[in-house]
Structures are given as C-alpha cells and as structure tokens.
Amino acid sequence: MPNFSYDKSAALLERAKKVMAGGVSSEFRKYNHPHAIFYTHGRGSRIVDVDGNEYIDFTLSQGPLILGHSHPHVLKSVSDYSRDGQLFAGQHLREIELAEKLQQLIPSAERLRFCLDGSEAVQTAFRIARAKTGRSKFLRFEGHYHGWLDNVSWGISTPSVDALGSREHPNVFPWSEGLPDRSKDEFITLPWNDLDLVRQTLAESAADIAAIITEPVMCNNGCIPPAAGFLEGLRALCDQYGIVLIFDEVITGFRLSLGGAQQHFGVTPDLSIFAKALASGYPISAVVGKQSWMDAIEQARVIHAGTMNAGNPTVAAALATIEVLEQEHPYPRMFQLGQELMEGLRNAAHDAGIPVLVQGMGPMFHISFTTKKALTDYRDTLTVDRTRLNEFIEGMHDEGIRIIGRGLFYISAAHTPADISRAIEASRAVMKGISG
Ligand SMILES: Cc1ncc(COP(=O)(O)O)c(C=O)c1O
Image 1 (cartoon, rainbow, N blue to C red):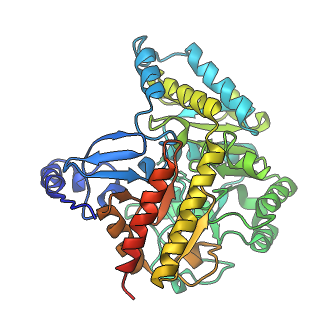
Image 2: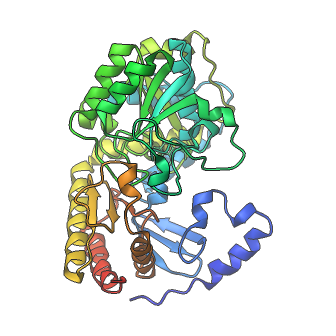
Image 3: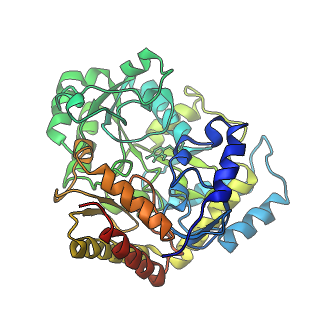
C-alpha cells in the first residue's frame, strides 16, 4: 500500500477557505477523502495531487475526460485555434464544422444550439418544450440529476426511503435552501423504470405536462440501465400525448457511443442534452433536437443566448475529442476494460465475504454494498450500506485509486489493462479491511 499523506492539500484547503466559500468551486469537490484535495496535473489515466500522490483516475473529472487527462491532440488543437482569438461575439467556421459533425453522429440532432454546461442546456430544453406545447410542467424521475438550478434541485436527496411516500404521488425534498417554493410546481416526480406509473400519471395529468426528462441510464444514483421496453414506452407515450421526450445525455453522451445512449438503445428522443465528454473538460454543451421542436429557437419564439457560447478553444476541444474518438473508436475497448474491472471487483468482494452489487455498462458502472441482485430505481439505491461504501472509497483512495464518492467508476480511452489489474489488486486489499 502506498504511504499517502494529504498535508499539503490540508494546508491549501485552510488557505482557500479564507477566500473561497467552503474552499471549493463546486459543492461536490468538498467531499473527497480525507477532505478536498488539490491537484497539480493529470496525464492519461493518472492524476497527481500537491502531496505527490498519484492516482489511477476513475472519476475523469466527473465524466468529461473520455480520452483521459491532457490528450495531446486536444491540447494542440486548443492552442492552435486560440491563436486566432478566443471569442468573437459572432460566428466562426469551426462552430459549423462541429455542429455538422454532431448532426451526423447523433440520431436526434437535426438542429442544435451550443451552451456552456449541462445545467443551462437542460433549462433551454424545458423552455422549448413549454413554448411548443403550451403546457407548464415536466415529468422527471426520482434520483435523476439534471443540474443544480432551482426547478431540478428537488427529488435528488431525501431523508429516507419511507419519507418518499407512495410511488404514485411521491414526496419531493429540496436539495438546497433558497429554492423558490413555486419551483416545486414545475414538475411531477415518479420512481424510474416503471412504465405503468408513467402511463397512469399521463392519463391523469397529460394536459399539464410539456416534457418527460430522463437520464437514459440512471447514473447519478447507482448506474441503472433502463428496464426492457422502458425508453421505448416513454417514446410511445410522448408521441401519444404530444409531449416532448428529453434525454439528458450529459453523462451517456459520447460515453456509450458517438451517438449517445439514443444510438446505443435505438430510441430517438425529441430533444437531448450533450455536455461532459463532448469536449474533454472544456466548457461546452449542446441542446440538440428535431427540427420540429428546435424551430422555436430558429423563429426566436424561444430565446437562447450566452456571451461565452462556442468560443474558439471550447469548439477546438470538442472537434479534437471527436476526431480522436472517430479515429481510435475506443468503445469496444472501454466496454471490455470496464467489464473486466466489474468482474474483478465482484470476485474481490466474494473472496472477502462481502456482499456487493457491481452494476452498469462498462464505460460507467457502480459498486454498492448490498445483497440485492439489482438496483432498479432511486428507492433501491437508498437501501444500500453507505458506511461500507465510504470505507471502500477511502481505502481505494489511499491505495491510489480515485473513484467518484457515490461509487461510480468511469473508464476512459486512456485506461490500460495494467490500470485495471492494479485497481483489482487494490480492491482485494481494501475489501479485506471492510467492516463485517
Ligand atoms: C445527467 C446530468 N445532467 C445534467 C448535469 C449538469 O451538468 P453541469 O454540471 O455541466 O451543469 C449533470 C452533471 O453532473 C448530469 O450528470
């Protein structure tokens, strides 16, 4: 086991706290082990912190680094394009090239607009849906994350399973103080993967519902694939009621395939959101969709704007990322490596006598400490053993394996079989120390 110290990070955190609220720039960064960590650099599958600790990075900066850290082609393109300028408050050729590429790759991308991040692209999609349908609410699912803005900061945290109440009419809890109470009236929440419930709710309330928004694979609590026929069922119901089907592909986009989950599962939404892995860590997102919905923006009935949208460096990063993904086509390898790691973790836990569930697709997957054979919705994820998960995450971190704190692993094109073997070896040591 490496002998990690976190002293320099601890000192920087104290300094940061005197100037940055909580010492961090995003809430999630607080919850590292043993506290927020400061990094110096990342290359390929590795990241190094200020104490000189090196980690095999399975967080990939919460998903964006599909090619790993500091991919040379991405860095060179960003540097080359930046020499021509950063931001024109006007259009440029490479922006069209990127849009044409996305149109070619993503099944639903007849038209698109670029934004900066997933949160604002989600809100753009809602605005289009409301404008086009004349209805006010969206239907969403418990435990799905669609950004940190007011109307989606509900239904992602909860005191207990029991507090959620009935499956038909769940209670929702705010994730933050300061949310306008009326933001709760903008949506209806249901447990995921239960098409009958969606059908029943639409039969009662379709007249109020502009859109259904879903992560096509539930990745923000567990890593839960859609039940057989669920996405297809949502598609059919949206068609039946004239409701917009929105796939939030912020995680699945460019992670499951170049055409996202919609290509992987063969279900085409009306609108979808791409962000994270689109540009290897540079801030760009896209709301993409069928012409018949996106025409609301085209006609300026729906306003979408942003000073920083589609700047030269971010467009360069996205084009370069896609070029590498198209050339190398790393998807079969990422699936294979992910599945090997999933199997290795299962075996390590089995040999240590610890019940775990390792669930997911390969390029992203999740470990939970439970005797359940599968997690199918948010309510299931609330029943797992958090203490053991924390022990595992912290133990792996001290072994030089960095995993997202909720138990999610991302695989990049930069991970190697040796990285996977090392992670499995570390998990064997860690599992042995997990409380019985
Ligand atoms: C599925 C999903 N949607 C939306 C968002 C918000 O994206 P961003 O953090 O870029 O605003 C996230 C972020 O993790 C996400 O996972």
